[in-house]
Length: 273
Ligand code: NAD
Ligand code: FES
Image 1: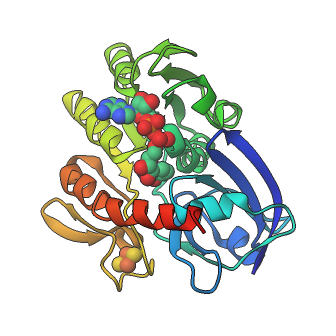
Image 2: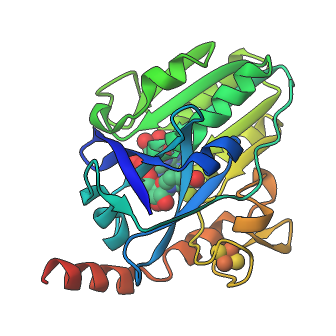
């Protein structure tokens, strides 16, 4: 059981929850995630560790309300307990000084991007961050990203904040005007597919953090299977980060949508209870 210490809405559908998890806080590195369960019979969902406070013994998770479990988690309040928190899981991000790094985050993907931006900046890289959201109200963690970036570019689909356009428009501008040594892209799978195509066009090595469906998080169930460079990989133990140019994003998109009908039906059933 992990007690909720703080809860704050970052946008109408996205909530930031700080929970007690002293051992995880001590061990976690950028790129790590946890698997969370609400209730003993609950579904298991993966969530990236956005922040950790070793002194306080806490980690911060950012949850987008998309299905039954994320709604349940978001409905908990300070003092309530999360039944199970397992982690840190996955491989930490490979961090080294490479020069100038372009970090592109879309929507809730900005949450897993934050610790990576922080680590790349601490390693001495020049970090240019592009934060993209459908509109101003959906943009999260801008101040936190700013405090670890040399430059921040904001893109909104509707132009309500920053520059109007998708994240890929902002990336093109940066690639045309500056020499970029490495790129990180995190967001919805469709965004990572197209951001990778842009960085490939400019021949900039790119890493994507994948958001596959997970069950056990330890490489046994196969739920998080992805094809990378023609080989089968498991996001939970081989990832979550991969060379974006090798990822079969079309297959990932298909697998992410595989349980959509069942998820919607389950969600409707829970609402009607
Ligand atoms: P969203 O749909 O609001 O998109 C965010 C931004 O991505 C957009 O503003 C746009 O700039 C860009 N984008 C979207 N489609 C694009 C396209 N076709 N071409 C170029 N750019 C495009 O994002 P959201 O609602 O916050 O994201 C929800 C999804 O993100 C969920 O499916 C969730 O699973 C996923 N997610 C991924 C990670 C990860 O680790 N990769 C983490 C959290 C959430
Ligand atoms: Fe089961 Fe990765 S979640 S193999």
